[in-house]
Image (cartoon, rainbow, N blue to C red):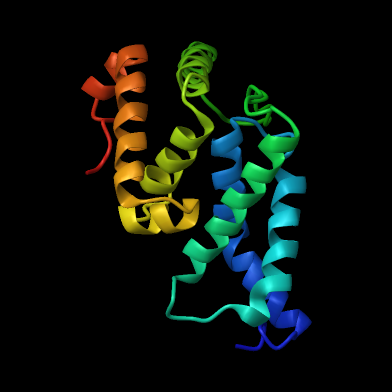
Length: 178
């Protein structure tokens, strides 16, 4: 792997390959957009520093990167208790939903944000890694540095909380994969 050997071009390609997933994970874990760019940059600095020591086969690269992101979030939460920031409204000009649909979408997003804010950071991270990034229970456990049983418990409790707060979303089929 050229990126592992320090080739800058290969490292840039490596980062581009994973940056959207890392941004998405951080954004969903933090429920906000403000600090995501800085945190993603820190994740990739840590990844590049550790890349020469990474042994393929022990874990998938994405699982290893998510584990670094989880540790960064844990470090950050110990320093500063900031786990929720509301999404900023997207203001993209041009063709988009009708004003009525936009209002409904904003209300739905607000309800989702509120429900997610009631989850513990660990539950949010487990839910994001499992449901959105489609990691297995074992991969989520590895990324979060915990057991599969703990991951399953966190997912169960997160879904239970969301089901109580947003029963209509679960009736519409957003109950999650098993």
